[in-house]
Image 1 (cartoon, rainbow, N blue to C red):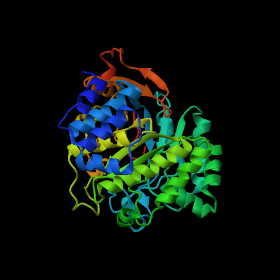
Image 2: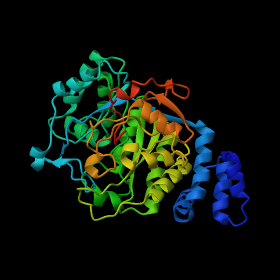
Image 3: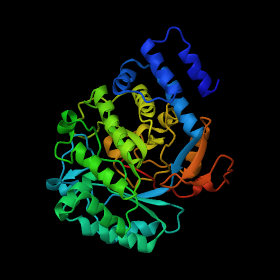
Image 4: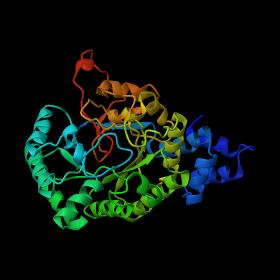
Length: 399
């Protein structure tokens, strides 16, 4: 039974709740669901029901295609002026002896390390410190582009940019325009957390507001940049807070069309100020991916990070609306592992990622940052030595 047959079978089930049937019919007609219907999906939607709807949308858009990419990650610092309660990664300024703060030369050393690798993107994100200011990143972007012009620079989140532009006395638009002229190509989606102030004040009270986060992305879109968006779920928020978060993103996407990918990020409770809060189950992870796919009708892609949720859950997510699982990783990032992810030293070769996707009947596609096809791996046969090849560092939390 294909995805359409499953959806029709569901709609014709006489035992299905009337409100849920109405939503399923709207999905079939490609009509937008409302805020209240989004909340209803969380409150009433069982895993199987949500999976049928989300997979129908996923396959109508992308068929079996499942995307991953090859990049490397630079974290300039894990020292931070902000005090996010959920963060296991950063160290406050007063604890900076426990962290690291890189110079531009050190960042360029990492770039040069990948000179002979088939990577298409460098992903930069980390903490916020005064010395890593506008000119610090302008210098790095310029030097990176001069060294490897074709390398796509996906750099920093609104959390970093808000601080940097405020110090430089620049508007969000002018600051981004200047850094774009230095080589910045696109922006990852981190720092969104939960937009509603009722929750944001409790978990990230001193970082940029939801309005500032959204405005920085809007200005990036005005400049022709593509960006991603995230949502941190599974902590103190209620279901309607999640829908409120997605609704604000959906409205901005209606306005600009500049978002590429929505990435739900699971709260992990190791070694942070919210360690007393239990993590949600895998079932809730899958339900959340599915609701995101159903609600975010103007986002092309839904991504799951296998290094955060485990390889098995990532495979399952491909039946619940997800069409991108990130890519091969080595231990260049500590953001996941320090928060207690299953993969403490994440690493998969390209062959392993391809096999992971194929084992659940999906079609593996290596993409670049803008989702252009780099390699279609559906019929690729790997040689015996491929497993011995080095890992490629790929996108991390704020991607």
